[in-house]
Image (cartoon, rainbow, N blue to C red; front, side, top):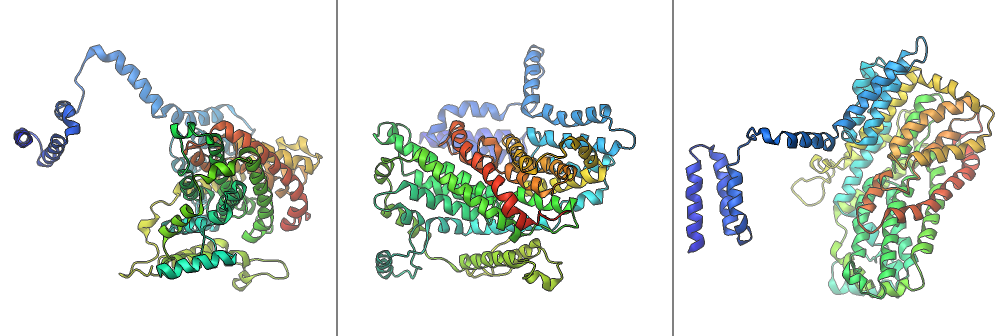
Length: 605
């Protein structure tokens, strides 16, 4: 009875306020008050909550708090990044006021000022990445660099449509948990496992396709940590080849940490004799997923924005040259990625696996637990099969559009007017046409499922292409070419690794895409200045920008992995340095050999 009387009194108090408050606000206060009164956990906060309701919306004037407000204003200024926001326009104004490239080169000076504005906002996160990436849309016309139409066209071309379509396809894969099924399942090849699973299939009569987990296949009895790492990292690398490495990491990290959640952490882990081995292996799993996603993205054009930026800038600076296609880049990028993946796996095994690791993990990880993960997914539905069919068809179209000079591919049927972005959007459109098989006319995808589209990355790519156009239109490329003239005569095989190391150093402090956007115009002009094929420098600059393994801020996958709490910066540095060294050495060997054949770098421009 007492709670009822208290609730009635609360209701009367609220009714008295209705004379001075709007009806809707009174209803809100009533529901909040009754809910808190009936909840015994909130009884101690009841009086303070009633006082908060009647608190004035605007603070009362109090001269005695002037100093406090001044400190608060300064803190607010710093917390809201107003200084970082002002730093961009200030740097641009200083460059435009004091930098002089000579008579008739005002546009180049203005281009440098606009570039400083955009890059300061990128580096400091003064405004959201997508907003900073749209800055060239108003800076370039205002500074007299190029027209508004010319800048806007850079934000939507065939390369951008390729990325946009692949992002939508990645959302479909994530929505139907295909990434998780791929990570946990693979067709079994050994007869005994087939017989056992077929018997289980007959028992539960579900009609599932016979499968077993990748983790179970590589795990073994007892657990084999090196092979388990190979299965997890290999699956991540494969997925990252076809979708952007950032969503790939976001999708695969929960799969990896789901395995790690079986291991004890905190006080439970500290009291275990094998706690050290478990912690080391947990670090290896997170580092493996994080780095395998970055390495896999290096293989194809759709795997990372840096490769897309290279294709766009190459066609901008050298439109008369043979374009870089999906198949041509994969012919070079995939072997490089395989070498880096082998280096990653060997490094993880040597640093984080020992002879006692398998014994320590066997207490928490066995086939029974892993099969349970498979049963939770259930049989593959019609929608999953259709998404996989569209995905596979798109890969075939990508790989066969342009093959060799003797076998031109299906693109010749359309007189070269069809690009990789064309077929990507065409196949993605099928997701919004084909029903998902659940009835009611619902399709595989609708626009509501596309709310998670990474528009910031798409706008960043557009900004990179706009900057490349701005370099060319303003004449800044000619000035850079004159300044790099002292490098004429330097051995190209020495400059290429230096370009890779230079780009790899910058990328640790900014994103891969931003580093690529910064260094590629410089390297393109350097190639023309010293008389070598520009791709001999632009490709190392692009690959070097993706060797971001040392710091959490180097790439979004690093942020995702570091945020799990399993690894430290020290772990990233110790693991990343050997892979980074192998990456530079691999590029120095494969670029003048395999790259010369794939990209035609033996031909003069």
